[in-house]
Image (cartoon, rainbow, N blue to C red; front, top):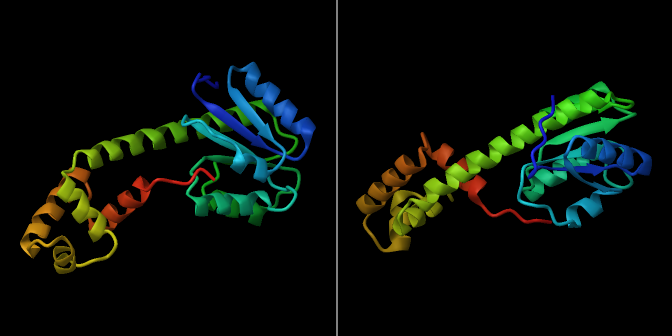
Length: 206
């Protein structure tokens, strides 16, 4: 059963106006905010709220296909759970989309409950990702200025002695700050710290 969240938003991208209207009406009937677009270009240029959200995306669209748009969003750093809908899906396409992180791949015509269940799963996933990112930012904010400097240089691949040279401090000082940063960020390895730094980078809206 889908539980509506007042701050949630569902985006729909489909070049078929009847599908857009039907999905939007369905979502509004269960108390969800929804915005619909006829193309991927309209979606990427629209202002999106900083709230748990997901994208209901048609596979076949003018210009860029749904799966190609999924890859494009990843390159842009736009992290939003995607539910694909299509009348032309096949196993390889479905596999590709799911491996790339899609929540669901629904063939048209789909049942209303199928779509609503997928949307709930997608919104819960996005809410959890946002909460995890907020905790990560809080850890980063707890670092001292020097610890942040060291972390930001270390994750670029610089050795401790190179970081020390850039900051004008001793190598042992870098090791100490690096250790504190790892501990405060709860990073188990340098690779872990690099992934955290990547997640903390500001992402372009378009």
